[in-house]
Length: 118
Length: 116
Image 1: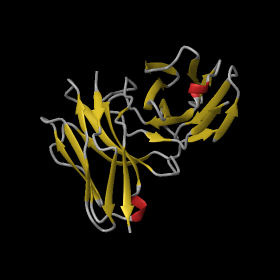
Image 2 (image 1 turned 90 degrees about the vertical axis):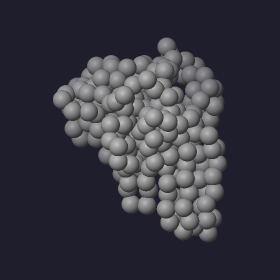
Image 3 (image 1 turned 30 degrees about the vertical axis):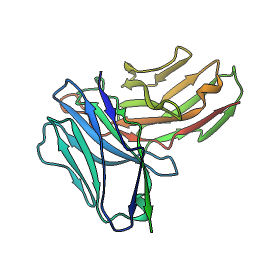
Image 4 (image 1 turned 90 degrees about the horizontal axis):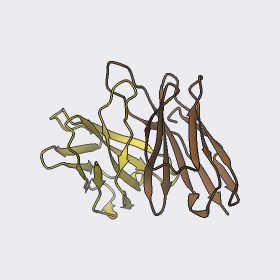
């Protein structure tokens, strides 16, 4: 069974600094996706970034980038120029790459609570 | 706004009761997923529907059931409620074309259920 592990329950970063959140996963599949979702105090789940396992290039979205190490089954999130609005719970998630409505549920880690200090 | 809507936003009920949570997916999305977020269990997948058919089940209790209707909205029914069922219930939807990989799941705002 696939599992996702986030080993940092809490992290803190100074505003404008850079922080990296860690995630490891376990799977025997070769085609899958990895995601980072953000959950602010409003509890809304917001997609931050997505990585396809078959892509060697690391995904980036503005200030957010990932370091995807497929062999090591590692998927970390780097937030650059941290802003107060980045304070939230961050969840790493995995799903199989599925087609036509076959099983594609997300498997989540337990989350990392990020605090941003002004 | 993700385009996924869930009603109600909050629900307070008593043990032993039955409730129905409703989800409307984004326009064009055929797949609907239900997730439960609780303090002790984290975010857990419950069940997936695709174009009206059940496609996958996760850690869903027998007291819980779901369905997806022809207009693609979905309902999650929770019965014989227990204190431990108090949680935030999310619905997510995605576009799942036949010949291309599923696209990203987008989440609704959730229904916060409190069982007293």
